[in-house]
Image 1 (tube, rainbow, N blue to C red):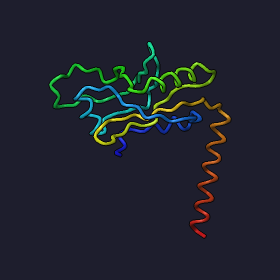
Image 2: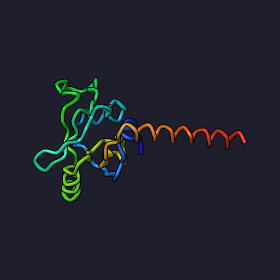
Image 3: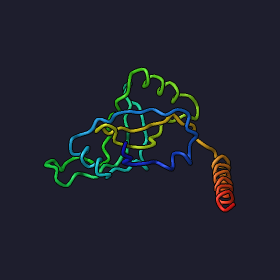
Amino acid sequence: MKQLANNKKAFHDYFIEKKYEAGIELLGSEVKSMKQGKVSIKESYIGDRNGEMFVYGMHVTPFKEAYEQTIDPTRTRKLLLHKKEIDTLIGKKTQDGYTIVPLSVYERDGLVKIQIALAKGKKQYDKRETIKRKEADRRIDRALKNY
């Protein structure tokens, strides 16, 4: 499994409830570009339309050697999930405070996959508490390492 892109900010901004693996409907030149690591999911988000899931704002740099140069780098891409998973995600998303966020893009067995998560937004005080906990864990690890 080769990591192509990661969304570290999602773990800072959300409580991750459940993770899902989905395929992405891509064009050939986009696959080549993604396998070179030219993908960003920092500003992207997941939405639903007509009972299907889509990723919006995922930036894939166009492949230089591709014959078709008219592909929009931030076009909307369809996610490939089972119907039951889509229904579960849409049902949970309608509840207060839940959203669906992309966590990472990776290559597994030659296929490009995206890991998405059902998440609940953190309040500002939750974010500060998480930072304090991480810093305390780092201090403990340093003290144990030096001991």
